[in-house]
Length: 160
Image (cartoon, rainbow, N blue to C red):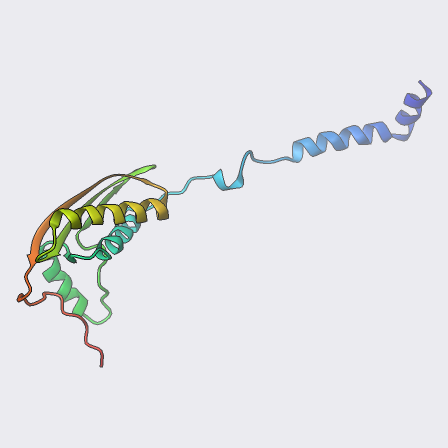
């Protein structure tokens, strides 16, 4: 008992207990810091990723309907205007999933079924890798075929 009385007199026991309690109450949050909070991804972000991934596929000549490409070509010629990578892409983004609609123009002579499959694979891979969203569907509408003798509606910019 003299030990207990001695520790109470010096305040040592009380300080140790308070230190233990303080250490337990100082702890904040819970779990991995990377899981705290919520991340939202805008439709436009997913549309840009999708547009870039679809254009990378061999056999895809352009994106969008004829009218959208015509207006886009005019807008691209305006000084300061940038080529729209989201042309021909519509994304519906939820908290964990996304659905995508694409409108493409394919090159003459390629297998449309193969190009569509390759576009789906490339788009799903890119969107899921970059956003973490599950791509539930990629709907593709082939709106035109670019014939070899047809003039491009979207001429490549000339380098001076």
